[in-house]
Length: 110
Ligand SMILES: [Cu+2]
Image (cartoon, rainbow, N blue to C red; front, side, top):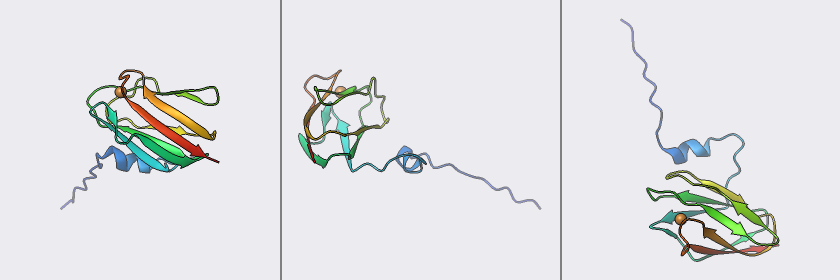
């Protein structure tokens, strides 16, 4: 009698992402929910990566625009993660191009 072996893939996207070979482990995870970041300010060190989740059922678009450092995620779909590596020291406003009231102040120490 043959035994059927069923492989059931875990559906948790967070789990799958942690298995990504080349992925750099984020220093901090910030959730976006109800059109807002889960905190108003964050402090990290230069070279750290912040992972932004999207726990809303609609798009976000994270961007940083400053003379020293800029970033644009383009459309960030629900459940998609966006990683930003902050390579410059300073204080940066992280904003959402779709929801102008969203704001996170990131202080990057040397
Ligand atoms: Cu948004």
